[in-house]
Amino acid sequence: MVFSWTAPVSARQYRRVSLLFALLACWFSGVPALAATIERVEVKQDRIVVHFDEQVIGASAFVLAGPNRLALDLAGATPGGRSNAGGVANAVRQGTHGSDGARLVFDLSRPVVITEGNFATDGRELTLELRSVDDARFARAVSGGRMRFLPPFGATAIPRRKYEVTIAVPKPSRKLKLPVVYGDDDSRPLVVIDAGHGGIDPGAIAPTDQLREKDVTLRIAKAIRDELLRSGRVRVALTREDDRFLVLQERYGIARKLKANLFISIHCDSVGSGMASGASVYTLSEVASDKESARLAARENKADIIGGIDLGGTTTDISSILIDLTQRETMNSSASFARLLGREAQPLIPMKANFHRMASLMVLKAPDMPSILFETGYLSNPVDAAFIDSSDGRKRIAQSVRRAVEVHFARRLAAAE
Image (cartoon, rainbow, N blue to C red; front, top):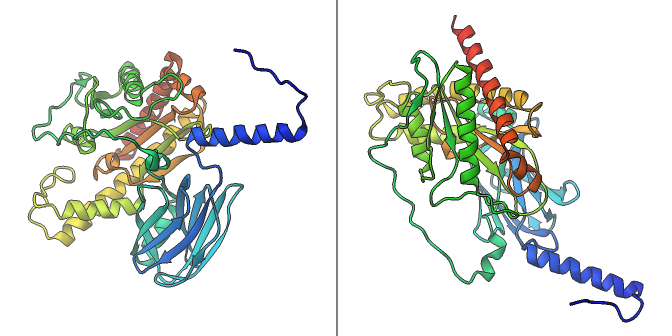
């Protein structure tokens, strides 16, 4: 069928057609045509709740000292509404941030850190859980950088949902089957590579060619395994070598049972809109470690929590201190490896300028094993997707990891002598 204009197109008609196409593009993409507006901000003693009239794209928060403040950046939002001081904040200020965002600044009445941040299911409400800390802990949080929060995937589509599919998540196996360890020399350090997602969990899906994250990460994990084995300097194990589902605790649980020296979880990033690109490396955030230390210390069976030490006969306070000290050393080692991986990867693969990030990710919460999550690129970006799922891309990613691993263990060996 051929369409043609029957009369010359006027400037007004052109503008109307352009506006129609713009509105249709926003409708079909599921992205709001206009930015969300901050409706109100509730400040309490132990939390901050921000309400919006539409879903925002995402948020990030960080704390500042001198004077003590908490800053909250909101992508896809505009200032507005009321924000009364009270609770943990002596004052609240709103302003624009960049071309399409808003910033909230809270003048703190006492030092606090964010322990958790969650969006409501419709993406129109963000709650930050807070905890009071001493000055030393607050100073560490200042140097720890941002915590990032994303609304639930597909939240804009919730009002139009016609059906849903529910799949029961299998329980962790009581008798966890350990994978094959590649490499003959038991004196060599062990690196466990975790291919993200799998089985009933496909992970992100590329919009163009339907690439599934679970398949891409498995191919990358195997390429890293082969590259590390060729170096002859480490042993390697994969948490999964086929399309199977593992709960998050099983993933780092496998590595801990194998007494791994390093844990690397492989993932691919994705965003609902835009052309975000580049790889990033995540390590556990400061505030997340505190919560995990408390949870571990509260377990009834405290045996073999840190390096084979049985904490069963210790009090909760002593257990918390021991776990905390161990985890801080682990976090420092994880962060060091993350920076090292970023440095070695930059000449080989596209990396974000601020590639090292911190987050409260379950897969990183082993208290006694350096762990990172490597987001190798964006499946939502066709250029990134084509690269990370190509043989050349996998080779470059594997080379980046191999170089970083070699330097990491060489440094640890030198420090031990």
